[in-house]
Amino acid sequence: MKNVTGLTCVICDKTYPADFAGYVCTDHGNEGILDVSYDYDAIAAEWTKEDLAANRDRTMWRYKPVMPVAPDAEVPQLTVGGTPMYDAAPLANDLGIAKVWVKDEGRQPTASLKDRASAMAVVKAREVGAEVVTTASTGNAAAALSGISASIGQKNVIFVPKSAPEAKIAQLLAYGSTVALVNGNYGDAFELCMLAAAEYGWYNRNTGYNPFMTEGKKTAGWEILEDLDWNIPDAIFVSVGDGSIIGGVHKAMKDAVALGWIEKSPRIYGIQAAGSDYMVQAFESGEDILTKAPIAADTVADSISADLPRDRIKAMRAVTETGGAYVRVSDDEILTALPLMARGSGVFAEPAGATAYAGLIKAVAEGLVTSSDEVVVLSTGSGLKDVASAMKAVTAAGTTPMVVDPNLEALKQALVKGTKQ
Ligand SMILES: *Cc1c(COP(=O)(O)O)cnc(C)c1O
Ligand SMILES: [Zn+2]
Image 1 (tube, protein in one colour):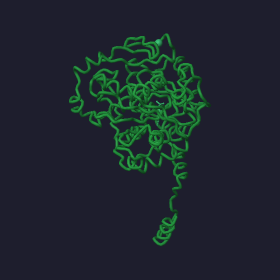
Image 2 (cartoon, rainbow, N blue to C red):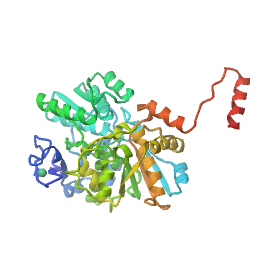
Image 3 (spheres, protein in one colour):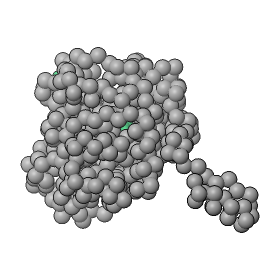
Image 4 (tube, protein in one colour):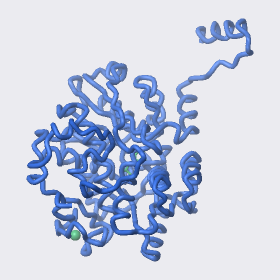
């Protein structure tokens, strides 16, 4: 991997070699997350926008020159990446802004953006000859590791809170992972997974710990830029739990700036649920996120429920270095946004995906986004992941189906009644 110059601690900037056997900075423990550094001059000398455009591989691996993998690295065959981004004119009209694009990560093989990170994890695990790969997760990272592992016959052990939505647990069991349903929340599952990984020597995919997960997730940011033909949007909206996705989107922007492919990053906005708003609190108060105590997270958007965002240093920089902001939305606002986004774009998201759109609604109301702005909403996971919440959302919106006897007369009566309502 001659494109990688090393792994740099986000706290002290100490740099470790590209083939460093650990995961985090030896001086800073689990908070000392490493960031992959690249030799951008060497990359730019060998790789151009034209080369990229000519590449017929539509998966995330088309960005290999800026990924920590060898050019000939074998990758899992599931199609990860290449998700569509839609120009959602009805949403832009509703909000009174220039453009809204919705990027649909529900189209990934296991139906969330996490496939990008998990695909990277299994490639890195194979590099070091790991027998078993493990992760803790609120559900989607688990489903992603589980599915991608199944596609290559990789043994894996998964830790999720017992309260994870049924669809996510069903995925894990269908893919044949060894599954531990933890009596506790995501934080508890994370700690147990860390202990088990250390005890058994399993390859550790954990978010905000394994330095390569950012490098997988950033390919979503690369796709946004490439889809827009390197004309950057004004802002990108991302929901935030651990803060790894938003850090990844920011990394893509920094990569592209370093290569000279774009001039600057769009503003990046991080959206959190009011019941899981660690980053918003710190953004507003200016508290030091290295010492700020964990909160007790509770939100309908299970994928972004985090007491202590593991990747908070990268997550805070994504916003502060791009002129964005952290924005808080209530569970009600999330559930309101879910059918609104579905109706205005055709993209049906799970609550954590709709959170990004709820954040955009709020940002427009607060004047953070104005009428000339062109905005990307990253819809991180499919609505089919959590049907119970979707039903709650449409019920709250007052949407009810007609129940009819199977004859035309009954339908006519029901339609008349429906229009009277
Ligand atoms: C994981 C996840 C998020 C949040 O990502 P973080 O990296 O934890 O901030 C948002 N939406 C969905 C659907 C997810 O699965
Ligand atoms: Zn350090």
